[in-house]
Length: 418
Image (tube, rainbow, N blue to C red):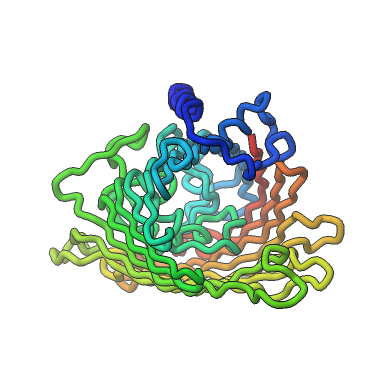
């Protein structure tokens, strides 16, 4: 990884004209390691934005599931955003590299065994490039084309209000997340992809489409970075249409001074290859496909503090019932920014997800009809670079397994902007 950073810094040294008007972040206040003697600021002016974060999660299973116990999981990430117009004079062109490392236990696998993964950084212990792409803008940047190593959960089937949770279905939902031979290109494995996105000049509507390798990484080797296009992999296609009405420009409160969420989107996805039926005695091959809907809204802004308030979201998705464990999943939740007086940057949230077992899966596994997972969490912004986030989770009918007792989980996340 040190060679990658050295290469990026070298590029920054030969960048084009400085953008003096763009001072960038306050590295000394917003990061643990500071401005590195002015190096970060200099690179930012040249078009290179370096970021490093670390998350550590400790979770305890108090009852139910596989067994009681406590486990630690860690995720460390390095990212480089490059403005290639500043660096190389390439008009409306940018590049992005994201590298991450996972360590620790497999809490969900070893202690809980639920369909919904209860910790969204649980993964194989390895380090790899997650994303590495170049993007070019056209028509005053209303149209953009991206190519490279890409993760669909960076732009598709996501909404900002649910991102605070530590369970997985509030990022990429499990109806799509369960699909594919090695999952779709979502955390922690990206895939070679082409993405096209159009946004209206008013930014009230967007349409985006991605075509990706059907098998991200190497299913036989989860460690390290692998980009391979093997015969039979096929492709994954996904399209999303969204309405994002912009805040009212009139009144005494400027749009940038208040918290505002208003997004409604529908999406459709499909693999080009066909998959075996869940029933090994049924030789029929089926298409793997699905659709989803999501919406989020600002429900209330505090009168005296419009950057704080209550928002909510709803998400629903379906997947092919003959080849997937779950044929639909749905989530709903609320999020409050600044609930406690004097804690203006804290976020409290509660969310509930239902995962429904397909009829074929129920018949073959004598399973229950669904699993319900609930999470209540409070993200405490200790200072600009440090957050502490306790969480309480309750999972009923984990993995739709009638032999599993309901699970109570407590834990906490520490997140550091390095």
